[in-house]
Image 1 (tube, rainbow, N blue to C red):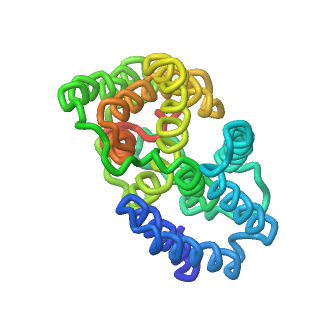
Image 2 (cartoon, rainbow, N blue to C red):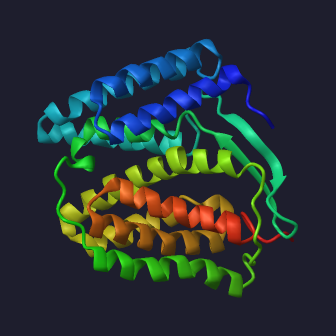
Length: 278
């Protein structure tokens, strides 16, 4: 399926806004993100109800750091519920674009459908407003050794999954790899790492320590993949432990995003994706 040029501009702008955020170009991010939402509304990818709810949650997020502790907790609870709502695409008014429909990555791969989501990536911006420290301007020095130690068991999960026949080695470069990479890196991985690592894990870590934070956030990350069945929940939880460890040792959101994306992209290129065909 080929994106219509008029619709494509929405996600190009959204991607640009995300990149600008990582570059800490606040004013430019606001301008581009606002343009994205306006374009989405006029191109019928965003209903008025979704536009209003998005504006309201952005206002709430902007005010959150200024609130007293009690009201801040209430505000963060609302933001959490809203984030879960857009994560699972249950908030009405967003018309996510189906860009791949039952495509096959390789002869042994199962069918794969993918949407360019407009709702889920907004989690990143909302959390960044509510909790600016999810991207600290001067983070601690990363523990490079610990990161490299974590990489091996993380990527070993793909081979373990192949041993139990959940997936299988299959070198393929599907024609749609570029749209997968674009979507997975900037929309999927950024939103998931923002929510589960920079928000959930970091918050729990602050309260009761980094090991409980890592484990609980990873369990929640696994459960968020419930639609794929118990096996996907299990492997997503283990992968979450890897992503969470990398985030913890690097102290940088973009590093967690990068390794999350690399894991998914290696899965696509070197193994049956998303699963072994039945």
